[in-house]
Image (cartoon, rainbow, N blue to C red; front, side, top):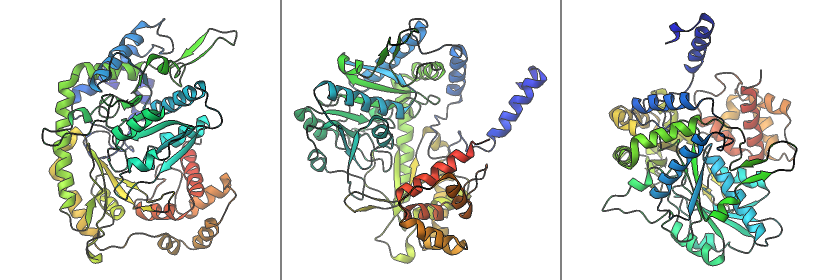
Length: 498
């Protein structure tokens, strides 16, 4: 295609294609996180053409570009029907799940204040709630009250609702929670929230466009969407199991007045009156158009067929993990995602550490997602795990994937989990530095963080991370969270510095 372009343009695109070669694979099913591959090349072509048509359009003002309003209307209508919302449920297409969650929190805060709330409002949520909610709390000046979960990722609804009080602006539950694929107890939490006059948000960013087709006749899901009285808002990502390009999500709110509190409007400057439904002002209409085109093409039946493929593959992979000596699936996941941990009931020499396992799987050409352990507010510890997200394309590569998972487990079975001491011992001089960080209270500056990363063998170029991630994750788990977060900020910021 580039040969028909002027030489300069062809060279630019050739360079772009060369840069892409270093990226994780977005198609083919070998990356089991971040990407949601339908396995249908037709959808990629359709999305690209939809983006091309809408490329010059500014989504800022649907009065100037009524096509934006038409596409958004159709998507909201589809999502509302899919999630059992009535005519009182209205919504917005956002740039992604994080923005949807941010807006849900912003709406709840403002509604709470308008109802007479004073001081700092609180969000109550399980400890497994997505990181978008700590981010929202940070941005909007809200306290986040995280309720500890069991080691299988489940939260006791009574433990959560016991935290309710007049300062609570929002309760959040997930359908399902990303770390372990756990479907939170939506109905009892939403009912208690309704009795207390508290809004209840269901974060279905990852499950919203797949769970409606997940249940079988013999295993119905507990109600989790707008069919549950007391659910006031739901976020559901089009760019996950709606198979749209990044970034497109839907935020649905029950009640027009509530949804209007999501908006920002001002005429307090000498320019044009500004009215924004989302965090962004000017914004591309490309992702919106691509999402609309894909939903129009698939419809409920097409999404159902893709969900069935995900279900078959998820059942096959989880069955294989459960049959693997030394590994276990965490809890009872719902949907096409789950976490894998060491089977502590197995003899020590037969146990498989999930992080060593993930590293070994990557050496075989597949990328899983390592998740660190977490000490919760009550002192209980969630084990470190490896996360897998299954997509429709997985079914086409299932035999190769299952072989890679099994052979990797055989390779690392009996290998002790990595520890921070192992890392310190392998890097001369680093141990003393790490020991000093354990009790440090003042923040690292950029020079200190960069030097420490370099001492740990973590660079800032294309190969910033080590090939084997288990030791690095063990190190990050051992350090205080503020130190870890500062190091990760320095790492990511350094990647894009000129």
